[in-house]
Image (tube, rainbow, N blue to C red):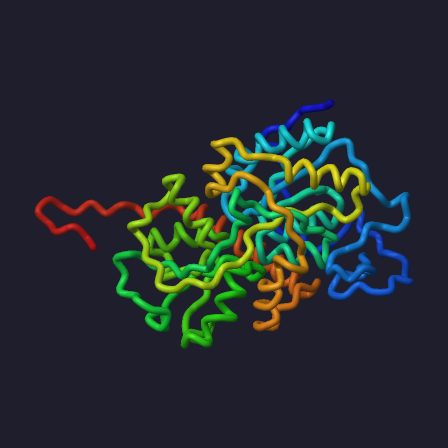
Length: 363
């Protein structure tokens, strides 16, 4: 069996790739009886809310190399290293080569599966629905431990030394949302906060940070007054020493949501798809991987219809359908946000003012 894991494969997908869907997602026959919310490329004859496998055997894929990636909610390079032991296992278990495909945005990740460049992926909670509807992704597992699968809460973070004690204290302030498709970083706050006396855009300025880790770091640095983020990302950053818990306060938290989900491309050969599922569910994380992934040590079975029901309910509450138009708009926002970040990084540092001897330093 081939056991090769291509470490740190830098097959980076550019921002804006989601603006034009191409590749393997040729349309299903016009006779498709039901597709629900799925794109016209897919059918859902059994009404389980995910794409059926192609009925034409010629359209089923049995790749020699399994391409995997994980959601870019934090620095993508972190996950290439963290998932190395699992990909070595996946290669041994399936008898195929397994490589990590590094993506830099949610939109690029969805498009990579849609176009056939990606076979297995861990999608963030909100983008999972775009992957299901537009890319034919079939969620089948979530991370967890011996007690059950992992969930997270939306937490509103402020600096510990800030004056803010409640959501309504943030009126008129600068608050970081992560990206438009994010459940915890955008949709859930828009669904929940108005009923608590704080309406995004109306009561505070929304600034898209581009990621949960960027929101956390921005609050820590004082760039943002507050940020709603996924609690699991924040606690992992604390565990890795990127930030200190004592520098923050949580002024609000939600009920639990499912965390990131692992999905297969819908058009894999059924035997390979089942083998990949089995390889996931039998695996136990080594100590270092469990530590990096919030204490989780295994994968639990999951379905889109059941585990993502509360996520779809949030999207319905804020009239944010997981369709092509919404996805294209998010792709443009991600592209624009990245361009702004790069422009800021290229700006020369302001010269340091040295006060004359005996003069007070400038403030």
